[in-house]
Image 1 (tube, rainbow, N blue to C red):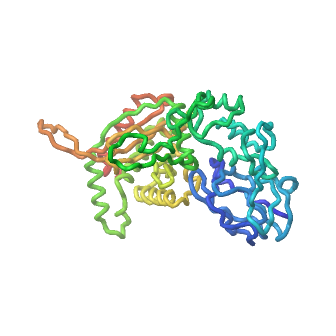
Image 2: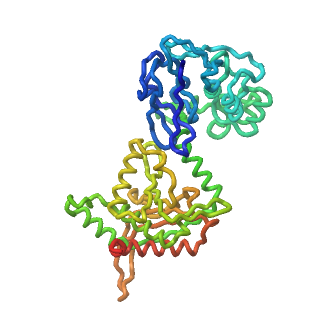
Amino acid sequence: MASQVVMPKQGNSVESCIIVEWKKRVGDTVSVGDILCTAETDKSTIDVESTADGTVLALLYEEGADVPVMLPIAVIGQAGEQIDVASSPSIDVPPEASSAPDPKEPVVQPQQEIPAGAPAVGSSPRARATAGSLGIPLSALTATGPKGRIIERDVVAAAGQPLSPAAKAAALADGTMPPASGTGIGGRVLVSDLNGSPAVSMGSVTSDSIPTGSEPDIPATVTEIPVRGIRKVTARRMMESIHGTCQLSLHGWADATALKRMRAGFKASDPSLGLSKITITDLVLFAVSRTLVDFPEFNAHFLGDKILRFSQVHLGMATDTPRGLLVPVIRNAAVRSLSDISATAKNLAAACMDGSIAPDDLTGGTFTVSNVGSFGIEAFTPVLNIPEVAILGVGSIALKPVEDKDGSVSFVPHIGLSLTIDHQAVDGAPGARFLQTLASNIASIDLLLAK
């Protein structure tokens, strides 16, 4: 009896995974625990293992497919076993996967023509949804799916530049296949482009159409980059944050003299003490965790009709990775020592960089810190990591003029601090007091450590 291998669920927040690479092919023999493929969640990269012994009879998705968790991705059974994933009651798979593959050959679906003007039947739900969102009539597509079915990749393959809302509605209503590009900004397809007006393709524009004197002809090209994985999730969350909250940012500075002195002392300390790798960021994280204890209204989530305040500080730290922005969480930060916070932060950041971070380590934050000081940015406006009610932006250390008691002016190193709050949950005055107290704690970080 053939068995299904499903896309495993990775934590409570992961809804789908993108298949990056199949490690096994149809006809390969596998055992329980063998890696079938690598997959990318919106937060990390995972290995998907076989849950059965036998021969790979079918791979139900291509590389690059975005597969919802807990759906079948492969079928494993006895060599030569015939399966019909379209009708077999023991194999429940999405329409895109319905076929009867030869166990000795890779899965290749036959290409069949769908007559122009045919009703929208013989198409998968995902294909219909994608076609509707892109303004592409199904009647104009060529099917490559099993049993002549139009599947999502057929729609994507036919898609060109985005359509304006009016053009999308007109294309679907008239059954008109939109051109690959239009006359709108960036090649956007307009209603006029559907009516036969000439469309200008960015890819066809070259420098010989522009008077450039003796300059060489250089073709203009456009690179299309799919928005998916971490980038897609970040884009969605940033938009939700901006549109769903009332964000107010406050900017200030903290005397960084003690920070620099302590960092220099740690760096020069005996390696056996394990303090040499403590950074300015670690010291700021420590100060934030202690300050939040006295300002519980900022260690909270805003849920619209209620506010959740947390007794423990779970400190998120924005981390730049090659795959995009991730925010791992240092749990119970307010009861950890400085060296513990430092070690935990480095371990989490390393896991984010190599893609091994566990999804649960990226959830549950109650307050976030984002440090871009290493880029020379003195102050900025961090965007809330919803549903958190506040986020701290940390800037660079710069010399600022300070008037002494005798009226003379000296230059003192200061670190930039930018606090963004959700004004629905907290007011500006408490935000200013929090930032003022944090600046004081950072300025006297040595005393804060002694408490």
